Length: 439
Image (spheres, rainbow, N blue to C red):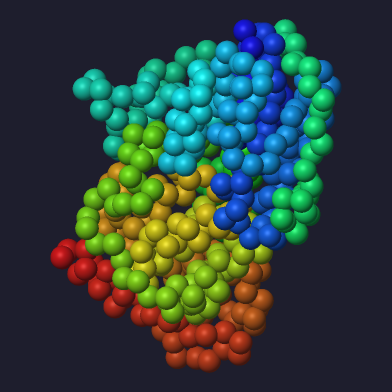
């Protein structure tokens, strides 16, 4: 068999389903112009992916498997390769956002297309209810997944004997030649990430929401781009569990990632439309501009946005607080916020981002009632009690006491140099959101 091995969001050589296929192969990675053309020239994520691909190329070369690199439209490139070399099939890991599904559908019209279960533990069509419909609520989904789970789910793939198709190894395009001014950024080391995770697991369930603690796994980028397999993470959790370390809280979060991917697969319209409720927000460019420039006057919200803009990351609790404020206090369309996050998150994953925004807006699948609205000041008081997170990202607030930063009335009544007053009154804004949703 002659296979075209298409690396995408699986940029590693260990525990890889593509490398378990025996036969004559050609390994490729495509810098997709349909995606890249929408990004700014200085987008830091392109530099990060570029470094990941460079490292993958070195790893595969050590296995005598040259990685061929292309820049352009994937459908056209694969068609040209198939015409030149007559492959029996193109093989790639699953991807469930609308663009990926349409792209893969077009490729499947050219030659046989095999998708391999790699980013997730279960295929979406495996996790259905007895009536063959998908689960719409996470907890039943989680319980059923636990019931169906077997050790085979996390077994590592065994590399097969592969013979690379003999081609002249093409040169890697430079960032500049692709139109980018960013620099290559060193990717995270997966083995180090798992070592760090071990130290955090025992208190993960207690501290993961604390904004002032370094208690999260930092695995999101590695999982998003497949620098480490989901199976390797589960195997590591099992090792830790055998040592008496609590792992359930973290495993549950991994399955949330799975649940959201399945939902987007079954309901692709979620990328654009509410699943429930007709209220779609109120378009207000000025409010949107103030949110995106971290000038809302609400310290925890502005700190969250600044973390995103400066680092490409945002703490998960901060994402929830910011998204609730965006959709309920500012009444802006969740799609605007989703696109803003998509433009800046280094770990951007369509299913996780879209479904999380719909959850915050109260319009999504997993039933989050529209009348449950986060109070950003109470959230900050609970999860950043000493305002360390706020002051890290908003240094102009260093001289203000945490008590006052968590007090909306105080912020409205006092003038802080170089920092605006809160742009909305939370109680009034929340009441208006509930009124509009009820209509």
